[in-house]
Length: 234
Length: 59
Image 1 (cartoon, rainbow over the protein chains, first blue to last red):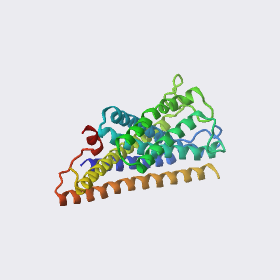
Image 2 (image 1 turned 135 degrees about the vertical axis):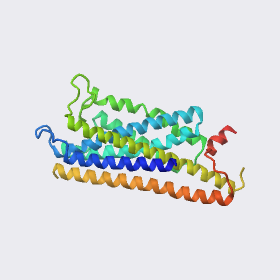
Image 3 (image 1 turned 90 degrees about the vertical axis):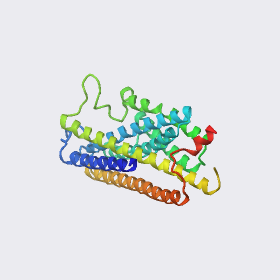
Image 4 (image 1 turned 30 degrees about the vertical axis):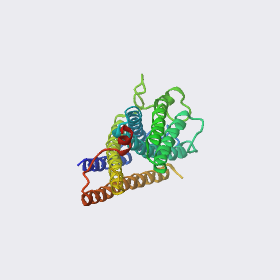
């Protein structure tokens, strides 16, 4: 039942993401021709920002799961940790990839090592990569879970740091266009609608992925117990 | 490359990535579930959501 609802959410989210793609191409207004070096590539924004938003949701789930495992030894916490790391990695990679492609078109370079926002978000994605690969390569046990949970807990510090980075140091990455404060941002109404549909779709999609990933971890644990039973354990 | 080419490359890459990732996860879930159901029913094990590592720690 839980597996089916996760699949429904995945389907809904995917359909919404594709709708965002269509609206971003066909319906959203173009930006001013002199505002960007590459105005067409700006349309990647309708996926880049929602993907980064979904990555932050995943990192929040990773943080919550890490805390629940580390302080309470909660099996649910461990499942949240695993799901948060996997979802954070996937959405982080989408945001980094789309940002690099846009940067190559707009700035003439895919990455700027002096930009704080780029580097802190890149570090977050690398942290998720470390957690996913580390879990797959290490034997499952209390010690390894404690180690990975610690990284999940302290790595979360990068999330608020990434969020405020463009507000404090606007080096290369554009500043906020939503909730920017006094001037209310630089988005037109139609652009904001497409962005909202994108954010909602990515949120539904990532919740579906987190649920299905938690289910897989649970099934793997049951499989391990069955193996233990076959081997003559209690 | 012009902006539209960059945009097409980026979107195709992401669509492929999202589709492959989703397909892999759903397929993995269904495969493990089918295997587990077969093993548990053939051995008469009662399905449990318990985590052996946290149980081990509690013991």
